[in-house]
Length: 166
Image: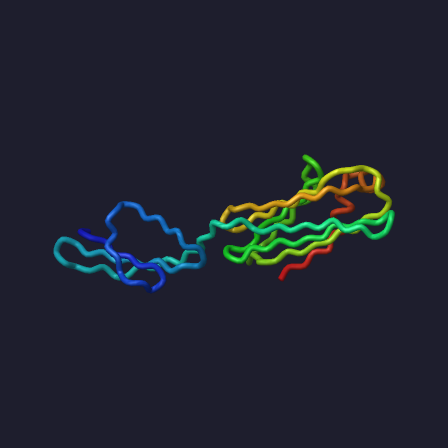
């Protein structure tokens, strides 16, 4: 091959002058190329569809109090390019729950957790992963009941997460 031409998303054909190419635009792009050899023979056009995503998911948490003895944490995760593939729930330094979002990746993940009789101070951290390998997180302080900490940890409480995927 003598020269290689490429284009992104039906733009004009560009001569590839370096052995590597950096694509900085995000989204689902169409990358096409063809080459011409020393004899002037032209190859067929090759096509790749690439989901390029440099932006981490957005995690938003809110700590709500419902009177003296009830509180709740609600939140959402949003990822609009490559889609969400997993969400982790951490209490302090301990992983309590991992929700592996199976194919196809989703863009929204909503949840809420309501608790009564607070006793211990801690923090909830939610870490979200997208299909491109980016991660985003948010933390919120809260108090939780000793009753939910017995047995298998806070797993019982986290199972009560009411989540929806859109």
